[in-house]
Amino acid sequence: MSSSSTSTLGEKKKVVIIGGGYGGVTLAAELDAKFDVTLVEKRPFFFHNVAALRSAVEPELLKKVFLSYDSLLKKGRVIYQTATEIGPNRIALGNGEEIVGFHYLVIATGTNNMTPFKSPLELASVTPYYTSLKENIGRATKVLIVGGGAVGVELAGEIATDFKGKSITIVHNQERLVHPNVGDKFNKQLGQKLKKMGITTMLSTSIAIPDTVIAARNNQETYPYNVELKTYDTDKGPVEADLVFWSIGNKTNNEYLQTHFATQLDQAGRIKVNGSLQVEGHDNVFAIGDITNVDELKTSYNAAYHAAVVSKNIQALESKKKLSVHKPSGVMISVSLGRKDGITQLPNGMILGGFMTAAVKSKGLFISRFKKALNNPKELTF
Image 1 (cartoon, one colour):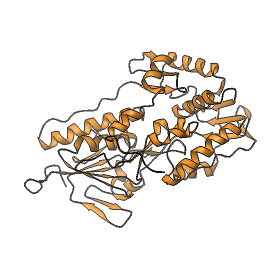
Image 2 (image 1 turned 45 degrees about the horizontal axis):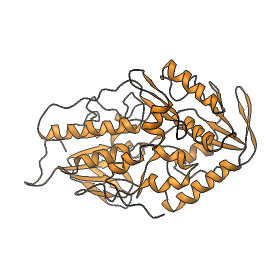
Image 3 (image 1 turned 90 degrees about the vertical axis):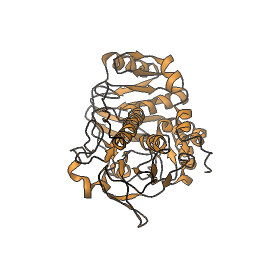
């Protein structure tokens, strides 16, 4: 169905958004007043995963991290189902129903990661899981974090802050932590901060990842972090640890795109979009967030920015105006190191130190911002 399709006089055009992550909720809220919005999300809760790592050492935070969608839309609706087949004219749902007759489709299916970096599927398991995780961190004497991206580094910072003196080692297979394109100043200052916190880093070091770990991430299984002293072989020698976190990166959620959008997926499994964030070959199908092949860091900030661009472009198509173009900026990344420290690189290469990073991110982890984005929902019961 093309963007020129019209609905019955007086009816709003229908927009279907698949995925209720940062980009999906931002876009749904922005379009709610002017369009008939349907948000499809498999979980009955929003997981603010920016704060997930602190929840591992502070489970009391969970009530502020898991949020309800109930207040998000005043006029639209949220359907809690898995989209089992996503096509330009039809969405099949896990309960056997389907969505048809929409005018715009936005794919915001995002990525998967290991628990606790992404949430358990069942809300009832949340509190026991994170409480047990904190207890096991406390019991462990040697913590190994495999993967030194932003997630692995922030987890190390949270553990070092709340469990001072604990042995923590990050094993990372690249020369630089967080991202290969961070600047020299960021790289140097981050290394100094981690060393001061007592965190050991092993860079350009490979370690075998068990098949069970990869399967748990890909299948979104709740992964158990048990305390058991083992020796792990790396190409730089053995590392001993009794608690291991596998921060091995994200897996793209593209299974349900294979039937209709297989030719639009790149080699990494991300969907190819043009500058206006339209999926290749489709004027009325957009994609936002981690699922896209846009060459930039996959962050909540960029997902929300994509949502703003697509919101403008859907409205521009309706009014037959020129579409906005998303211009990826330079590397922008903010890394928390506990509640009072961190480091930020702005797109122009400027570095913000611990005081500013703590004020902007580390202290509150954007919890208030995203609670407001969901229209201040009531606390979930779990």
